[in-house]
Image 1 (cartoon, rainbow, N blue to C red):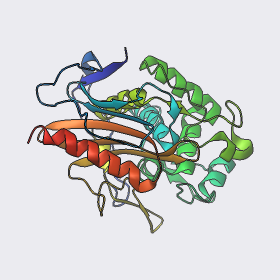
Image 2: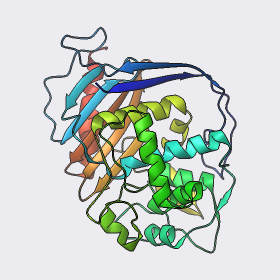
Image 3: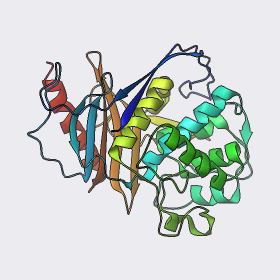
Image 4: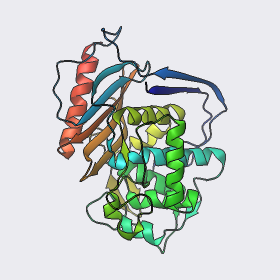
Length: 319
């Protein structure tokens, strides 16, 4: 059975701030306790949540858990590996944060933009923050572009900065997935784009390959990420990101506007032709945090609408 890794940490926070952007996770204290808990699929109502049964969702795969207990509130095909699109960037975020923690990387370090990162950053049809090879960008600027606007070129630049090439970075991604017991996960690139759309730049797998994960693995990764680095939420909940005097919107439509849902503060959207519209979300109300995954919905709006329906049903049980 899948295992949900709950890491209890003391957190000493330093801050790096780029322009007017939110502070980023920096240093943390030594780990004091590590507790593993299983994803719990109960056959009876839970103390604070009843299993959601009377709901019909169109998503190909769905999982909703109480992040504090590991209890599964709703699931649909949650153990089937599917294309993850940009939700894959949660693993890239984790490896960047771990590199910062280990001292291998610093928020203020300047990063050169390779031909690969530059080309993908100007590719139409996908989330992009236009990068220039005449400028240097800090790790912090690229991280925020990735985490807030899902910028693919920025993601590649970070992967290359850490490992020298995306190929070697993908090896790290898959190694880390094994360490986290993500049994239904396979990465072929750092962004979640289909290899087909990387042109001659893809280096792992075949032209028809793409990153795949199950909803269970995505929940485990998301929980580990925000438990180990809780200040990440202060970055990913920002509605906009500004770079070179240009404003980019957060791809998470549940933070503000018509689709806003009270308490949502993350986490990662995704879309490709193979994956459809996906969303790994997290919300906190009344001291209870939920983590959700919806995969393979039919539209940008539907992924947020279906997530909201899950949250509404869950929180109805404790009102």
